[in-house]
Amino acid sequence: MGQTPAILLLHGFSNTAACWRRLRATGLDARARVISPDLRGHGSAAALAPVTLAAVLGDLDALITEATTLIGYSQGGRIALHAALDPRLGPRISRLVLIGASPGIADPAERATRRAADAALADRIESLTIDAFAREWAQTPVLRGLDPETAAEAHADRLANTPAGLAAALRGLGTGTLTPLWDRLGELTIPVHLVCGERDEKFRAIAAEMATRLPDGEVLTVPGAGHQVHLEAPESIARLLP
Image (cartoon, rainbow, N blue to C red; front, top):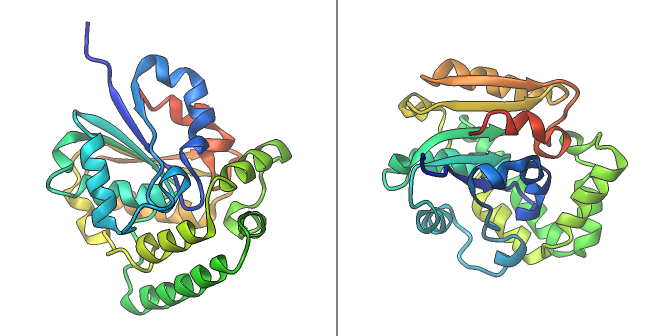
């Protein structure tokens, strides 16, 4: 018999490991050894410091002990790309599944503008209760459009966070902070599945551009879904996995 495959799930900003409940309910745990941590600044890891890419990659180094499929949503997808290109972690990552993810912002001026906006948002988060922030964040254009049951589940997940933790995650792991990886995508020789929802126009365009730069990249557009495909159509992701 073959070895049980390993799968590591990396959630997005303002989520926790609980956001993968629907994907795991497809039978994933019966087929693989699934690891689903809370990233620094989130959930049970809200108070861990520092909240930096180097620290997060160190956490992943302890979790990835064999050939692993790495699945990342949004911010988690960006971190997954950095992990796959890390000389320590890369050799242990056999496949990437990126959901609504980006390699970052290539233009330095645009990245600086985003970094300033993220810093201002982090300040605002610290002035709110977690419930108030969760309700406000759910109205972000890219996150709108969930059915009531799914929206309630996403809201409950966000309530497991703290304003201080999320502010730290935004400052330390935000799109404006991390180095863009567009010019390094050609180094990834492993299979990379780029999953995006049909309604998620921004990230569909990003996925299409990424695919032109990846040696083994494939775009999967999920009909009817938005940015949060792992919540809206988890079975579409499960079909990509062992």
